[in-house]
Length: 497
Image 1: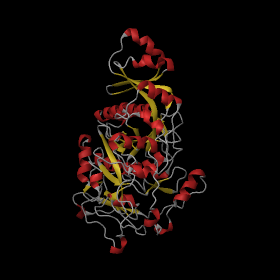
Image 2: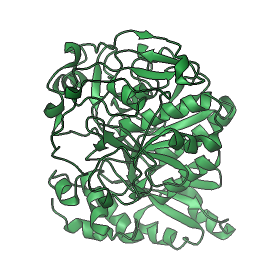
Image 3: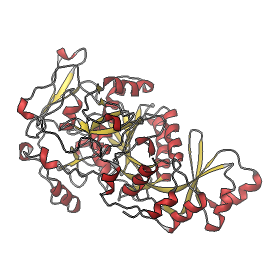
Image 4: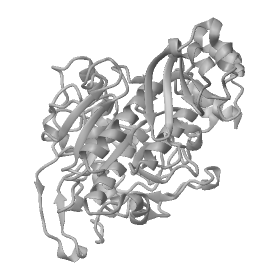
């Protein structure tokens, strides 16, 4: 377990401490004669439910004195939290030998576009969206989005889609329930508010990073597009609120997340009649104060849909994926219905959703699109479904169970599921009770795929990623002997990748 935990930190996040900044969570009242020692160092206050926390800046010579107050305080370094990065999949060409309608945006072009706005990808042709009343779908009326993005089609059917991409797909969704009375808080890097795909449904934007509202990184816009954009979104009438907790490099810290959660808890109660959801496609190594904060948000009655993470390890080691009261989403590859090679797994994962080459919005222009892979793009699919269910009147306390109840079971075909203990074989399902659209037999490739199970620890070490330390981080670890699931962090210095 310790080896795998080390790998998470080596391969994914750059963890630093910001100028001796810490977060203290006050467990019990501090005696009056000690308050004078603490007050000069308090910077910002935060409270969620029973949490009463402060951002503090502690000089080096006072760290030991603050440690002596551990009976009254929990002290956590203000480490970085990051967006889960877009995963690069090696087997792309095997499944994408034919471009859809000649309109597919090549990954290289999309990368160029992020650097230069005027060179944008050819607009993806998703055809016309039409509404059809389908009486045979049961008691509900469903609409059809013809020539829909692949992830929407897979999420509204039971059987797998064709392996190749030279086919068209349909998305079937409830006509009368598209999240119109639901608000989703997108806890991310910001959203491009003027994008026409959102049709004016981004109600507000708030920044907790001191980098300004809006998205100059792209992650938040892509996530929001899958939740509720006109073409790529699951819930096409949902309202969105931009909660920017990651800066223009996709990085935030523990306190920026705490501030965002504090704001959401109050804003949801006062402005949405409690009809709200949080999407959190971000994370870090297990951080107890954040776990506590997400639990308090859940206790306040706000559902949280979060990403499992992209490291092929136990999701319980990640925050918020392993936090109590959240609904955690992993990724599967809908070209062969196997768990994505990068997806985290385990008992803390509640459901799998499409997460390989999911098409969504670009933040650099209003016409292009991009494909992204990772649990970050799987999560908003389930968030969109949650918005649909809330708009149908499903009580929030029953929301997670209803999402699971609608899911399709035992369809993922990984041969070695025993290597992923506790992982649910459960796929998101949005669509009506109907027979799936039929494709010809030659639409499916039967050959064995190279990657049949998530990457192993040895495989991922070959990515040659390294963690960066600072003097501040070394200081914190030596003074606080900071433990994350009994991991001895001082061993990290000896690792050379």
